[in-house]
View 1 (cartoon, one colour):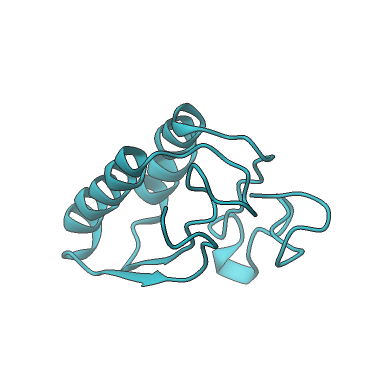
View 2 (view 1 turned 90 degrees about the vertical axis):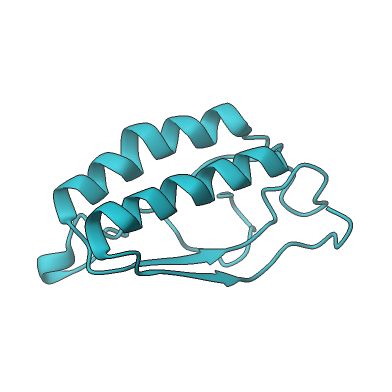
Length: 114
């Protein structure tokens, strides 16, 4: 999630990488309340085409769950099914582009019951 006063305080669209990586570090600022449909749109129309152009050696994901429906800080509406769908998409992309090299790290989320 993106917004004034929301941690970590960066992630602007303009933060797009440096040198040869310019344009491949992509932040997709979404306001509070985004949902599964918004996530699907970003995956299909931003991230997947970006990976197709970049051909990464590996995919690194720092996954916070403050976007999960019911998280008190994120105030978003992403379902567990959408998180699973995103993960499956990224795994398929890793298989196709980078010999299954995908690294997932969990960070964040403020409601352990979510």
